Length: 430
Image (cartoon, rainbow, N blue to C red):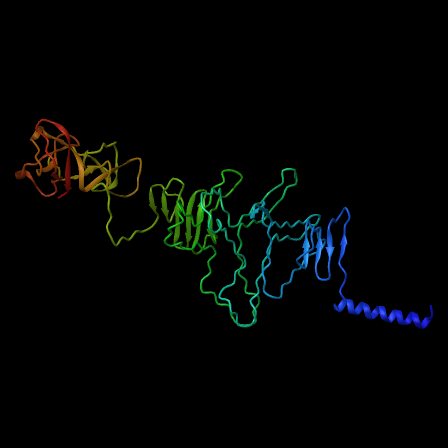
């Protein structure tokens, strides 16, 4: 071949290649039909790999795909990207196990991180036309149009996180922190104007309103179960938790705690409430002053206090001031005693003072059961009561013998003559 003819063919081949790449010259359809990729087809504008018919999309893959590098999918017409794993049976699409599964693996490296699924939405600098920005939206839609009958669903999970150690793995993993859900609010630099967020809801459960077709037996805004083993400290919900300011801990070993600079609040595992103390000894234990602007309602109606005594005193015993000891009481031992100090109470409505092994609960006012001896006269409702010669007992008073300081109270129920027993009395020491 002559050199001039060769140059002409070379120039022609270049021109033809440019025209093919520019789309002026169509490429004839081609097929791969071997054992590895049966039925694969390439046309002028569509590619089918593993397909059994001519592809209808720009790229159709019938089979698994493996990528050694990252995959970027860019859409310029604001269309969505959907991933669906379905089985078409009888004209109906049914999910086959998992709609979309993404696995990230970090192996053989000492440092690094893996993100299983990451979604980022960027709001442009121009004025947006959309009212909201949603990073991830999950909807569990039940049923199709025109269907009837009953379908039983075991559970629906909006988002599920599982920390799993494989059964055949003998390695120990030390994980500093694990987050089921993590919301990170960042400023992203100091330049530019501020981002003003009116309300930030870390978890928000919207009021469903008046439901007529959906019935919810139990609605839990947040439900946490206690793990019985493998947990050193079980915290259900923690707000800050550094012990300073307004810190709240719900569910610490089934306890509720509120820490603040003014004191602590706790509801322990036995149901006792402590204010100003983490170790309540009663149903309500307040370590500090109490101010009440309303009523105090109690089942029992006497006011009593802890007083020192040298002997065990049973409920209903009438006591007097012990003149041989400071701040002590003993059972009364004489009639018309001006040293009368009250009655031993079994269940006081209000109890003052501190408990002690050498102390007794003495009622000073209110209604309480009192030991009486009617050997000195029948007691009728409304009779005045004073101390009797019998130790620890009261009797009906003779008004002519009364002097200031002798009156114990008034009988609120009768007792026949010649008996020893207890009557309900209104204690009014005078």
